[in-house]
Amino acid sequence: MLQSLRAARGVLRSLRIYRGNPAHNRAMDALYARFIRPDDLVFDVGAHVGDRIRAFRRLGARVVAVEPQPALHRTLRALFGRDDAVTLVPSAVGRTAGTATMMINLDNPSISTLSKEFIEASHDAAGWEGQAWPRSHQVPVTTLDALIAEHGVPSFVKLDIEGYEAEALAGLSHRLAALSFEFTTIQRAVALDAIERCVALGHTHFCTALGESQELGAWRSAADVAGWLTTLPHAANSGDIYARCE
Image (cartoon, rainbow, N blue to C red; front, top):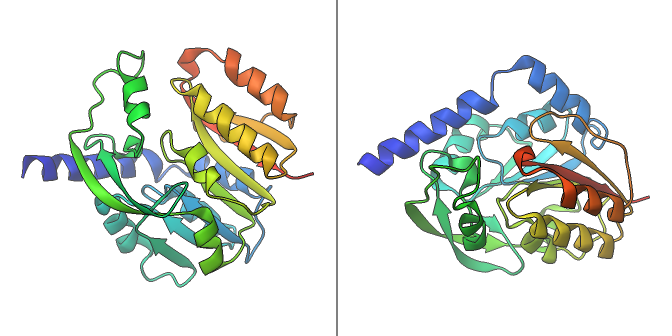
């Protein structure tokens, strides 16, 4: 019972943080409008409480939203279950299809993860004090290739899956027009592996946005962005790297 109450409070916390800020929403729309046009197909992998789904829908996109956490998937069903342009997938995304253990952060569900290495990297890291993952669930795992086979090739993919981004990209063999993936300064190697995978898939231009700033930097080469990431101060904490083909 206590864990269920904590989980409910965690979802409400996320809803307060990620929804209801008009200025933030406008900035988000302006950013994603660089990649998305009306009627485009978009994959939101790690949909959380749906702030990106709303942005993609405001831009007129059709959305496949992938979220394995039961409490968050129920929240997304309540918010988007009647929208025919949103397909909700209760699954994680990885290198291969199957099942995996998801470790749930009840108080901060946005950092629940499949990656034990992510949790280990957070231990004793500045800015990550007090984080805990007391609950776990077995969740289904699909791949980006399997999602494409079922739903079609997306114009844009957003990955925010807490240290599992490189694993998800390992399950992609299609060359996509553009995508983004989250990075953290506690696990830079994961982002460097993701950059390398993007290059192998044919992406040639990269740019970054720190935190939730929604402000893209200049487009640069993979080597330049990798160098930037390597020297980024720990206090920067997290952000997103965007990749596109020439």
